[in-house]
Every structure is written in C-alpha cells, then in structure tokens.
Image (tube, rainbow, N blue to C red; front, top):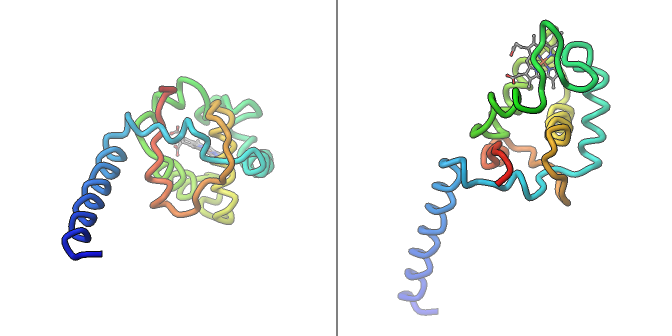
Length: 145
Ligand code: HEC
C-alpha cells in the first residue's frame, strides 16, 4: 500500500475514534445497554450473590427498606440515568455491602451488576459484562430509546 493511502486511512481512523469518544461522553445517544450487555447466566450468578449479601437491606424485590434505597424502577433511573456502568460498578464495589465494603470478589460485584440490570428490564445478550472499569465506562445507563 502507498504511503498516501496509509495516511488517508489514519485520518479516517482518527475521525472514527473521535466519533466514538464523542458518542460515549454525550451519554444519551449511547444505547449499547439496550443491545444486551450481560448474559442470562451471569444475571443468575448475580442473583445468588444478591441473595447472599444484599437482600437483607435492599429487599427481595430490590425495592429497598426504610434504611436502604431501592435498586429498581424510577428511583434507579432517576439517580443513574446518563451515568455509566463503570461508575455504578465502582460505587457498589467501594461501598457495598455497607458492613464490609469491597470485600467480595470482583466477579461477584460484576455479576450482581448484571442481576440489577436484569431486574431493571435491560435485555440480556450473548456476552458477559466486560470486567474492566474502562470498558464498563463506555456503557451508559439510559432509558429505552
Ligand atoms: C447492611 C445493609 C446493606 C447491605 C447488606 C447492602 N447495602 Fe447497598 N446500600 C445500603 C444503604 C444504607 C445505602 C444508601 C447509602 C449509600 O448510598 O451508601 C445503599 C446504597 C446502595 C446503592 C446505591 C443506590 C443508589 O441508587 O444510589 C447500590 C447500587 C447498592 N447499595 C447496592 C448493593 C449491593 C449490590 C449489595 C450487595 C453486594 C448491597 N448494596 C448490600 C445498605 C446496604
């Protein structure tokens, strides 16, 4: 390939990268979350984590109790719309469960995020959630497009 072709490719690649980055930061147009970002099996594993470690405070239906916030529905979207799964994951990992924050295996935190997405009616797909926070940060929590 000639050098000139190569530099044209480079320019195209740059524009694609910028377009991608802009899309992610603008949040609202980033609807990847509606294309299936976790698997059914992963949500099932997350349910086991939830039942063992979260249910006492956040409730069987994830509706919360008088001391703990609900994790589903309008309340969830009110707080999390426009923010990313990376931020959501990191908050849970840093602060939950409140009596021993950060003490679960990283996989458990990831799986419980999948379960919470499942309970909020986000669709399941063929691939599990990415395990890096960077990749999770490219997925915005947005209402159904
Ligand atoms: C001992 C009670 C308790 C347990 C167990 C617990 N939480 Fe919480 N959780 C709370 C309280 C209280 C808050 C609100 C204060 C805060 O945000 O730190 C909270 C906040 C949250 C939030 C933020 C809610 C929001 O929308 O801002 C999420 C998400 C969450 N918990 C998930 C979990 C998950 C997942 C687990 C299990 C791994 C868990 N919690 C275990 C008491 C608990």
